Image (tube, rainbow, N blue to C red; front, side, top):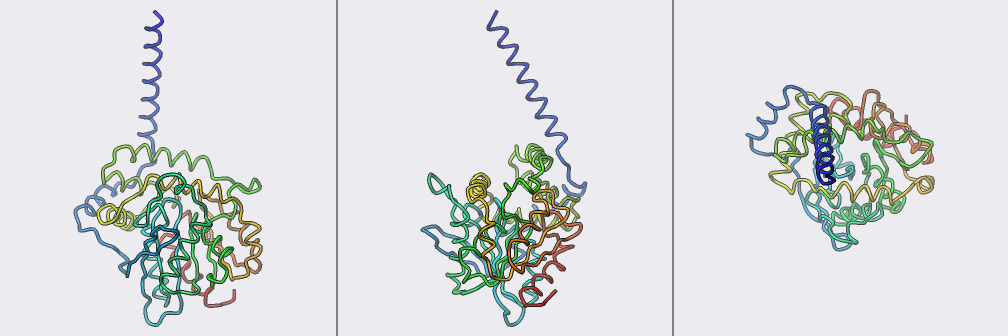
Length: 344
């Protein structure tokens, strides 16, 4: 009798779990109706890199960091190093934004953070336990390989945190600091935390598109997260661009490391606050944040700008946790004006 009751209870639990999963799967945030046809076109075409450039590897503590340089139009006015966010590689950067920078006369250097893309993936204890000190050293190793003394550092989200750490630890190598949609302390109890609604929607999108690992679903997973963080429906042009980059990553590169997210989340938590360090930064600093950011709310960007003496702040109406092409021109213009010394 006890065994029968146990079987019935387990069956009910299983049915309930399947029901909950099905409900989450079916109700996860959806993508625009044109998504399937655009993805089909992308998959049926030859994967292409929208930002061709010279590539290479830099060494840091025995690990390899992949990088790419995109040359400017005309004589270079200086070097810009781009640092990406959590679990993202250099293909995250919107080509429209990078082209705005190069067309303004700057050489742009992109690199894959450790554990992502073509850089070495950290495996086994203790290599998977790293902090922003190690990750900022990765960026410096790229500058060393290219024989660049100083560079303007632009970081987004977690990349902004790493860029802040670079300015703190390597002031002689940082010409200016530009931190976009980032924070100096996500644990600050006086600032808004990451909204649970956003976290829950990430889970729902992951259930809807991340269980069956087909190329089409992997592209949809990225599109879903992109749309969530954008905080608005993706346009057809956005869907094509993101799909093309994800497809290129799967076919021509190493695709995506599932361990990058927990490893870099550990780096965020273990690195703690940069409040005291930023107060000592003397280099020009610009903090940019979208007022519609659903992940790291814009008061974090405001707080960062208050920590660095003489820092500038740009709050962007209608922008979420992304740099969409609709805003890339004005953001790139503000950045290039800033690093050229223009006063506001």
